[in-house]
Image (tube, rainbow, N blue to C red; front, side, top):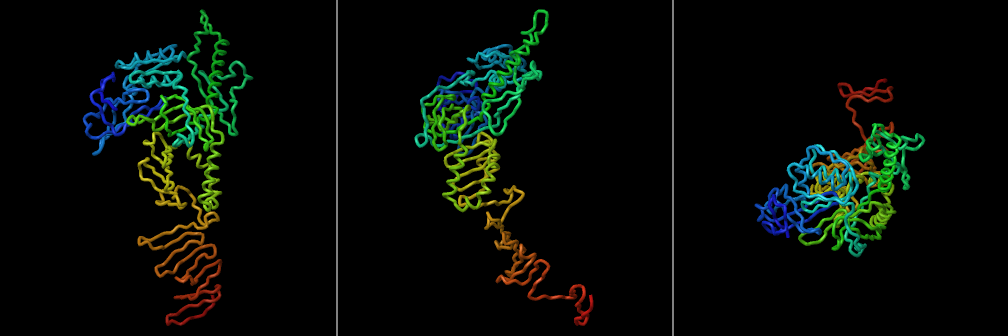
Length: 545
């Protein structure tokens, strides 16, 4: 049930102004990320679904309010992606406020109280860390995001109540297992932030060897790889002030001050290494799960084909408010890697290729091996969306905002450069054939045809009447004439002419010219010693060269 409220309403415990019979109502929620209602209804609500009105939908966390915006209307339906009222915080401004030595709840309270106009939000937090923050000409939304970045935690967005908690979710007894309740599962491994050797820096460029020149400026993680991951990171130390190490006469105890800075720098650096010495692994799951309560819930995932067995945390979900069930869950495991996952996938792929397309696997094995690294490089920074009947590789999330899209489905591999709903052009058909027309899709500088691994490769040029007039293949370059004779250039002949029955009429090979018959209109020279010419009477004259 979707309820409609006026734009100025703040309390939603009634049935509102109207009950809306929606044809689509999907709530999407991410940990510290997007929170919106993807909504559609028929045209009978055209005067209700208007900018800034509020839709209240049932979610796994109870009824939540979503602000209508960017309404789209067709002759059949009305649709909108209504953002949670948490994003109303973007409309309130903080001119200038210095939060000094506050815990997270205190920082949020003072920022919210300083907003103009008066904020309708209430704030709370259980994070006890103390910090400072200078906020100048930022929206309340920007200020709260900064607090989350500095104090940590997870946003709790409950209508007009905003919180930050150090931990969220519950340890459930849910187990999702291959061939039991998993419908689809995909994995994304992100190495962008991995660091195994860190050079930490604090304010004023202070390094770990500030007090001991013999000490290394680096911290090294216990986890190491064949490839080095060395980075430098600047850390905030607003909690350490010179005033705390200055006596009543105004003299700074430099030794104590710098010791405090270095010890704090080492602590922050070690914590950073511990968190970032392994890649971030996230999974996208479609499964029959009814007992998940919210973002942060823990579930057990077992998927033998992917060599996957782990406890993971829900980091995003899609919830169908009409059917009252989850349609998609995303979860992450940010402390472990999938041992052997890529090799297992590669092995399974090779086995499938061997079984289904032995010829292609043999003919292109070298090219496939050489391209594996390039394929992973191309996918780095991309996103994979598994939708059951198809796989999409896209350049941005959500998938509706993607521009460049690679699609794999029952028809083969196809490309679109204008989004998931754009015109897709097949480049690799399921039967193994290629279709690279139009030529705009060919980006390589070299195309190899006719070598051992591609013995049948050729390019044909056709006239508007669909008649063959040129062909490029391992046999050379052929040009066809209207009388069915053809000219060919290849490794045997610099130039050769054949009749329609493939009889050689004329050839130039090396330094020898061969022809069945020749016609000379005026002069013919042989070795610059003998000259044949035709005079005005038509007689042939023989003279020296």
